[in-house]
Amino acid sequence: MRIGLALPHYDSSFEGKPASWDGVRRCAEVAERSGLDSVWVSDHLFLDYSKYGGSIEVRGALECWTTMSALAACTQRIRIGSLTLCNDLRNPAVVAKMAATLHLLSQGRCELGLGAGWYEPDYRATGIEMSRPGVRIDRLAEAAEIIKRLLHGEELFFKGDHYVVEGALCRPAPRDGGPRLWIGGKGDRLLDAAARTADGWNFSWLGSQETYAKRAEVADEACLRHGRAPEDLARSVGAYVLVGRDEKDALKRFERLAERTPAGILSGDSSRGAVSWDEFRRTRIAGGVPEVTDRLGALRELGVQEVVVGLGAVPFQVSDEEDIELIGTEIIPALRTSDPLEDRAR
Image (cartoon, rainbow, N blue to C red; front, side, top):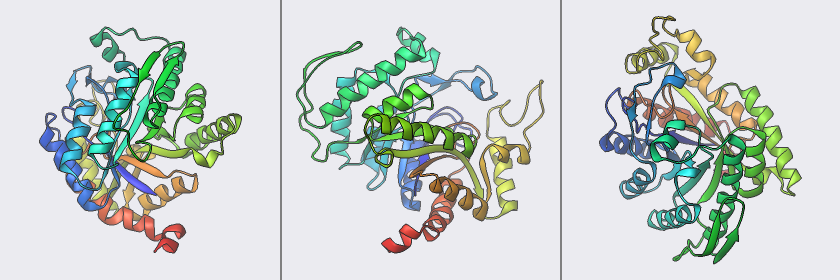
């Protein structure tokens, strides 16, 4: 099982400080040095935390694709991905060209994650109509087909319900077929699109393993419906993870996280009290190294090939870079020791 990191590129998402390139770069370098496999950036012009219990205060953000490009220049080994690119913000022929170029510049380390879009303020701010979910997903499926064909070197003429492409090219073309194309989401219609067009499917963010298992069955059925072996669709999960060297250390790290998280998410507000450690860990993968290793191993048993860890209470939050190091130095070795496939590979 591979382990990636959701990078903190929003205001207050790294150590409670404003968004900065220095913070993102530091986290990526720690992740690479500590042995993680990938780093991921999400795609919003800005964000608020009202969905997670926080306020409607706007949080600034570093732009997804520009940040990924800069990360390619300051890292050597680690893969760099979008989790996920909002399809409606960019033309798919342009996305294909961007992805092909970044894949070449990074020597094959780009991972392209696409989503249908969900954050209405992004649409309002850019003057783009936010269609109903089914239309956005159908548009995503067309975009994924266009991107995939262009990345495989086709001179593309395409006319669909949502896009028309007249002779688009990706030159120079990636020699290996370009970055893997992931589609992120959970609904039946989206899983059908992933089965038809994508290399992999991402499920974010994990609540219960039972929910993921049920969605994975739907993904399997979609693959079979399209004449594809289910195991040919790669699987990744975004999961909130907080780990300590032992239970006492995990609690200490949780208390630090609560101090650095915007009000209302963990600290409580006028309508409810603060979130306790026991309440926090009921919906997250949290605890000492053995417990976290076991729970991640259970995801592996469900066919998950990569977990993108969010080391906070909201997506793309990191309380302290120490938390990244512990994933690399303790969790990854423990996972690989417990994996019989890893044992045979060694």
